[in-house]
Image (cartoon, rainbow, N blue to C red):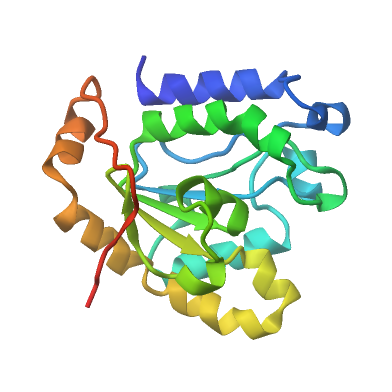
Length: 216
């Protein structure tokens, strides 16, 4: 099954999913959007009010800010794939619960495998924890790590900068380096991962520990 078919199948399954309690208040699931050929995958935390209404990720105020951040980083929204760790809105925009994260984990894993992105940008602590458990986002934001053969860059969620203006400069600075991270991933990507991009039957190499990549 090609990447687009996998993404379509995940979207169909998420739309009718009943694996956790989030489906009770769901209007529309938000599986994610973007091209199957995207080099960059952005992973947020969960849909909000407007996302639940429209079935699209990052369409509210945080989404507008994200569009501006991407543009400042030299990347267009339509070039990246955007999703969340949970595909249905947590009530009142609360944090997703462990059982909800676990219920959606398979969907996200399948999306990552299908896309095989060069760069994964985590937005917020819950998506960061999938790749860098036990790490504080304030300590590592904007720092690239090799994890599972991909470049993972933890960043603050755009909504955090809207709620805490003191973070805005840091968020803008981190996103301004997005093109730099993409270039690094293209030139430094392990050969085994590069071969997988052209041969989807080759399993991705796995690493037990994240390795920080020095860009300096």
